Figure (cartoon, rainbow, N blue to C red):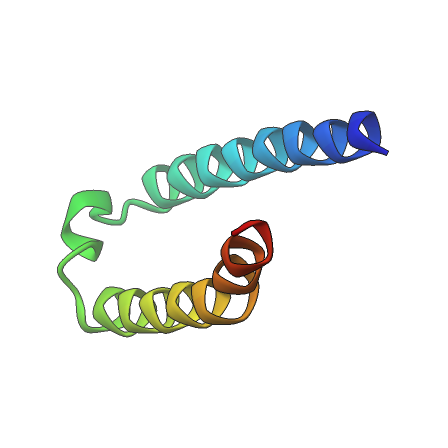
Length: 70
């Protein structure tokens, strides 16, 4: 089971890198300001959702795993 999980994690990382690369290339081809997006209103909303998602994952997944091992 560990080998399957490792394969899934590695393939997920590869797909995430490919998606980010294609997004950056798409922004550049469309003539958009790639670095300017990181300070835009939509980027701030994305950051808030990512932070809330990370907090939820830590509370419901990571903390129970830590308590289980103690």
